[in-house]
Length: 299
Ligand code: KIV
Image (cartoon, rainbow, N blue to C red; front, side, top):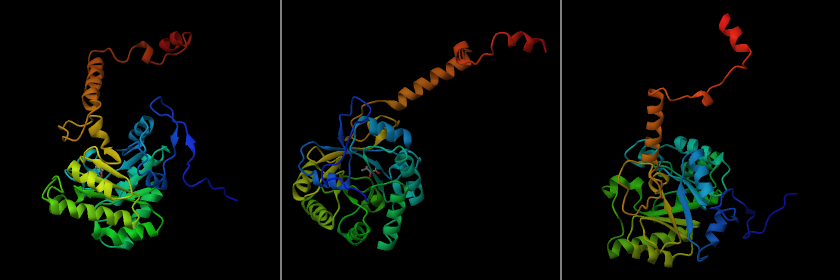
């Protein structure tokens, strides 16, 4: 017979680096119950095995296989170009590393806009690829779809504010919720998402005071990106926070490395060594056992 652990005291695992003190294995109920826990949640995007290992080693709580995949990995100008198959392919690569953080995968544009049946089927594809939850964008008009996915036992993370899949209807990547009416819509949307059962809500590109108001109005954690410090957690895109990108980052990004510059410099030094005949050297070459060499040379 299967044994079940207590609901709110998940197993303790020890992660491999000094950055990681033992932390609970992360689940949707653990995140949901963590509202007001005190310590902010940390989520970062990752899209493949190496980026997932870095995120896990750094001790984040959640890995988001975001549809930002389209822009930071696949080279598109917006997020509208990724498909469920693309998302499943990259979610599976992340999940194969068996990370301690919870893996959340984005439902891409048009994978949940055509009705609940399509949405549930596409969410299931991402779960079968290894996600433990899905994220989708939008407020009250997505409630039926959210409820159907949750009814299929798949946890849902909401996403409000600057929702990149609405790029065209918003007229670009623009900060949202800037007037009283728009802020009120966001608060009501957030309450509706929490009421429908979302275990957390991402708040993107909204004024800090609006994010604070939403955070105080809902009983599930908010996770902010460009939404100020008064959220229950923060999320950034892997390539932004690590500087694996040539473009100037948006104002809300704090860079902790310059991997693009470092990688270009390192690779450039290898190119120089090859061209100058310094690579490979003797220690980087395989050798035959000494007695074999003369006979080889004489034949
Ligand atoms: O796709 C993504 O990276 C996201 C984050 C910006 C929250 O949705």
